[in-house]
Image 1 (cartoon, rainbow, N blue to C red):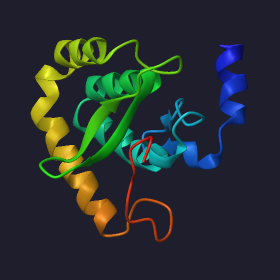
Image 2 (image 1 turned 30 degrees about the horizontal axis):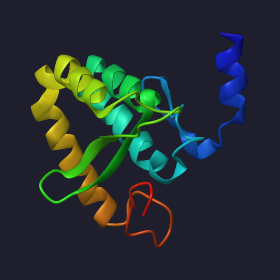
Image 3 (image 1 turned 180 degrees about the horizontal axis):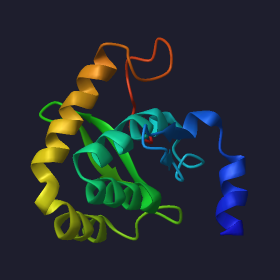
Image 4 (image 1 turned 90 degrees about the vertical axis):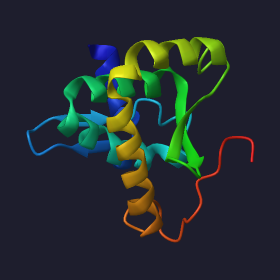
Length: 137
């Protein structure tokens, strides 16, 4: 628990979201992917509102090295980062998604489309930031 507190103390305020029920959502992956942190901070509490297990799964996927990237069909999609601070392989990421997200797929798709609408309307993201770029671009 002390390690978690130490790490939480290094995260900027933008990496936290307070839920009306008093829960705090943190983006533990912020140090490796700050450019989409605001998207996760928006997504996690809303996922919790739909189903707490969905929020837990998304938090796990994010912490393991998942980013949100634009997608024309779903608004945003989950994408693994492969490497020492991310997933071991794309196959491992896909297996985890299939194992844990399948029962929540419709809820997640709806949330990702809603996230994109909010983002496109300028309600999420850094000022004047109209494009979330995948890593390496």
